Length: 110
Image (cartoon, rainbow, N blue to C red; front, side, top):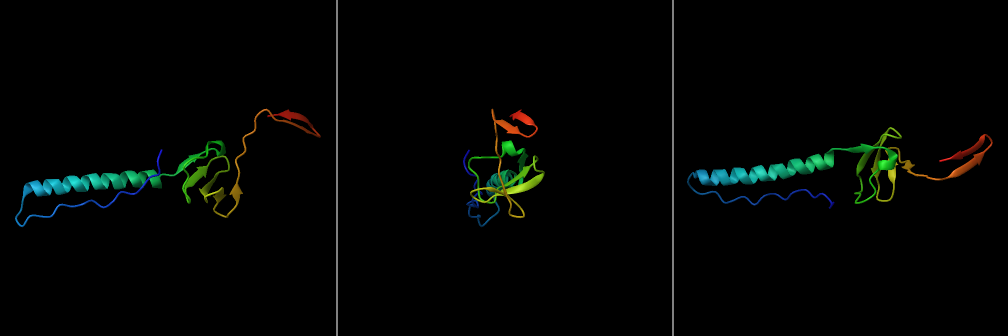
């Protein structure tokens, strides 16, 4: 997946000196295509992603990218190196498997 880029303003045709239905149709088609691109960009960038800490995005992250972490029940933002909460706390997601831990109450295997 490539980074999402906003669309460029369309190159509009030069209007004829007299009314021409063909020009109006061409102009409307160009504007229709342009605003579809704007809608797609807005949806992709403004629709927040959400999920568990284990499912946080890990590739192609953009600085300021938003993610609602349902594990910690808080929104977080990517700062270029780490996911941070609004109050600046760095959040770390650690996945463990096959780990043995011994404590006062006994042994636990994750």
